[in-house]
Length: 122
Image (cartoon, rainbow, N blue to C red; front, side, top):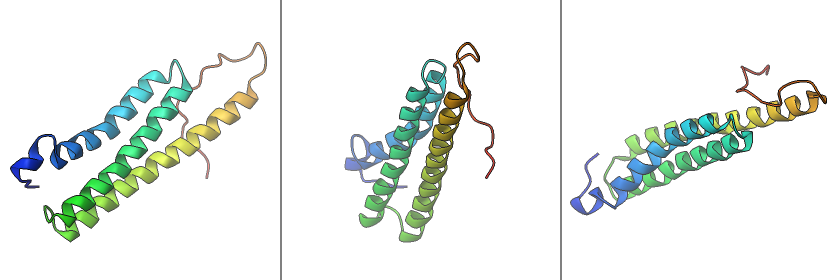
């Protein structure tokens, strides 16, 4: 992608770099914090979804400003929509696992700690 100089630093190119990196960074940070708090993992997971949605907006701007062609824009936006759907699905499954695990705990049994869910039955 070629951006005008004005967009290189502090402009649209910078926003795109930050938003795209934020997806992976939020997943990694949330995963690391899940040992202390499942709510933290969910919070970071939602931030990753938001960053994926943000990327779709920035790509549309790039297309509107003719920094990228329409076909490329739609292909990339489609990929970010797919990423957002996968993250949202993980969030939903994670929430269901937390509810199920919480309800199955009985006093004096289990550690109270939750791990990432394995593939859930459809």
